[in-house]
Length: 212
Image 1 (cartoon, rainbow, N blue to C red):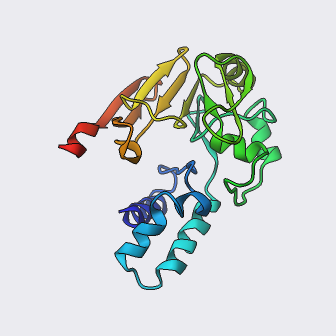
Image 2 (cartoon, rainbow, N blue to C red):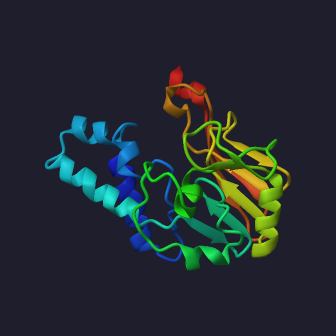
């Protein structure tokens, strides 16, 4: 139901523009969703002019913002941080809205989408799980949050078994897609954040429920 979900989210954004914010995800480019399901969903559903429709959806995804902040305290990004962006304020200076493809193997835009946090990493290291970007540790996050005057970071770069994990007291790893790729047996979680920045799991979709 990817197209229906996409249309629903866009409708919510139109109805409530000051309350609904959508951040671009790791698979929100044609090079990846051509392989990992979206293209085949459009094809199998037999939508009229489905190829053009698939391209239109990807064109919209190309211009979604890469990051967002909550209450000027929480940094939200699907992937992770970038060596060329030491603080939040540099993002608007360095990055213009534009398509970013998986084959584009360098640059801060790619890093924001595809870099990944590792609790055991120190500084910046070459990614061991992907063929591009970097992996980084708690020290990088601490420097970024401090320089940006932020308190927390939420990232969705890795499939978490329970759907949610808090590291180093500041890094929240959130994964909302249950049973990722039919292989990881992970739960999917929706997170609720209060005005006082208290974090609570609002909903969990368990992987086992999808397989029973």
